[in-house]
Length: 337
Image (cartoon, rainbow, N blue to C red; front, side):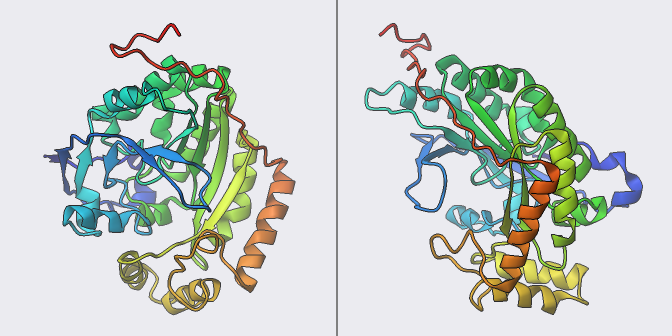
């Protein structure tokens, strides 16, 4: 058990945070799974396999769509999801074994599809770094999604992977208001730090994009254009967006958060969300779950298109190299044939 850590930079701006991050305790339970690659067959998700070295996320984002997965551990999607974490220290060893299988066919491995690979406990366990080291060794492509500036801790590995066309990074930025972000994402990096991370990655030659995600209508949507402009100036090569998703237990948690922080507009926010989700809090259907519909969604879509144009973001698509993959040997030595 250890005292919960923030991502290391909220205390740079005491006025913005004003002591709003509660001091809580985190426990980490070690897991020893038999395999580490998760295969995806969903037709509306742009990756086929992922690795999640952690379960639960200390960032504490109130809107996190992964919160309901904690029920698999008989834990709550609320505070348990943020404080009772799981780590898989064998992740890199298991991945090595799976990459060495004769029937393995390389496709980019996605990190950060469930919980953030650079959440604060990565500082202690370094599981994400171990996976990147293995990807570099085997010339295996990898993608990363994060809202942590801690991604720059691995700038050395990421730069080497980038020189081999093996990595693409997406950094999520939800607002440019540090106080608002401290309420939404109490232990993720501040917006300014995330934008700085985009700049550092781009300067190092790493393919990087910005996710304006999730967009919360009447709460964060007003930041869309400025986020895209600043990210473009920092070197972002793509800009994407997703409207907030509220699956299962996330919806009541988010409603409670709205009543606590924005009681004056809670009904308005939920009304707009439902207008984009066919009259429901959440739409779980393939394709439509990622792409909101209706007048509000069309407006955001138009705003994003214009913002990209003004920022000079060409929406390049990273085409990572899968042709140079080299299976690892059973003892960590690369196979000769």
